[in-house]
Every structure is written in structure tokens, then in C-alpha cells.
Image (cartoon, rainbow, N blue to C red; front, top):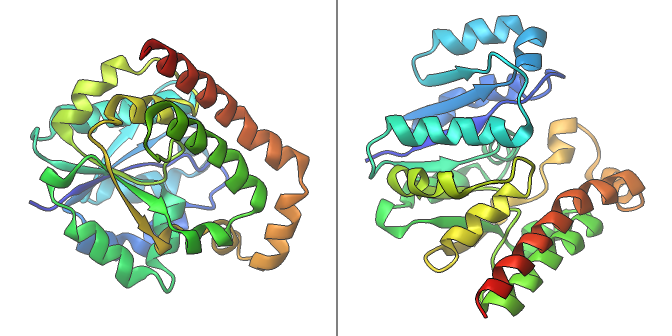
Length: 256
């Protein structure tokens, strides 16, 4: 059974939809179909892409009719994909910028091989950033997100990526866990991992190297240096990792 990708498309600036269009032929080689959700500001900003998206049967599209939080955008899409799919259907939960970079870079072959190789019985599976992939990221990104991973190791005895970039899961399992998810900010990613922590497996991959320089069409070394000294970038990472740490702490205390 070929997997079905699940990809939110929050792109009011119009940076990501051209990448989605460019990689669609490759997506069709990797996946049987792709579920996408589009927030209202993106719909208004990119009406031509809405026409293009809905004209291709490869995409099953949710067009949000009202403003939604980032968490609701993801979770409404995840719930729809789980509800309309066979329980055993494999659903890779993806990010468009990560997938676009992987498919338009030297990582294309490895990405396609890895996503095709996943079997439903091997899930839930989190693809982790390898050491090589992490080396490409700004230091503040890595060290702040690593705080959650380190806390998880102390609390649960397992190394997990609570700010994951690619999670493959069966539709039935996804449907079971979604009603337990309460957060509507980015910390909901950690909530999902907390639910599946005793069953999840992981695989480190190089194709989760830092995608921003490619998406922004800029020099990776210069951008990395700028992000490492940017207080706003550091604050952005702390804004979702601190709530994740609070969730981990609360969950760990319940285990006592």
C-alpha cells in the first residue's frame, strides 16, 4: 500500500506554493495522494494556486473557511486524513519546506528511497535529523530543541525529537491519539510524541538538513551566521520549546 502524504500549506507570502508545484511530479512518485490544508490568508493571497490545487485529483484539499491557529490548521488536516483513510493507511505527516528541499537537492534519491521503504507495521516512525543534518542548522536551533530531547531522555529514558520534522503513522493510530491533543500552538508536536513514546521508532537521515537557505535562495553560511546572533530567532525557538518542556515535566511527574 502506497503512503498518502499530509502537508499543511500556510503560505500567505507565496514562497512555498511554487515549490509545491515544482515537486508535484516527484510527490506522485512517492505517494498515492497528498492531503493539504490552506488557511484563509493564503487562499486570499494566492487565488490562482487555489485553482491549480483543486484541479489536480492528486491533492485532497481542505480550504479553511475561518481564521485558525497554527495548531488547528495542522490538527484539522490530520483529523480529516485519519477519518477518511483506511485505518491501516500509512500517513507521513510532512512539512512542505522540508520536502521541497529534499526533493530538489542532492538528497532526492535518499528521501524517495526512505519514504517508499516505510511499512505500516514499522510505525509510528520519526525521521530524525542526523548529526550531519544538524551540523547544517544554526547553533541556537539545535541547542534549544536539544533541551527537549535531553529532558525526555532524563524523564523517559529514550531519545526523541519532540519538535519533529517528519512522522509516519497509520491513520487508525493517528485517529486514536488526536482526541487527546489539547494544545493549539506548536507544542502539540510534543504532545503527539508523548502519546506514542513507548511505541515510536526513529531513523536518523541526512535529508533533514537545514532547508531555509534553499527556500530563501541565499548563501547558507551567511544565513546561518545571521540566525545564530538573531535574538528574534532565538526567541522563536524558545517560544515553542519552553511549553514543550512544561509538557514533558508534567508528564514525567505523572509517571512517579
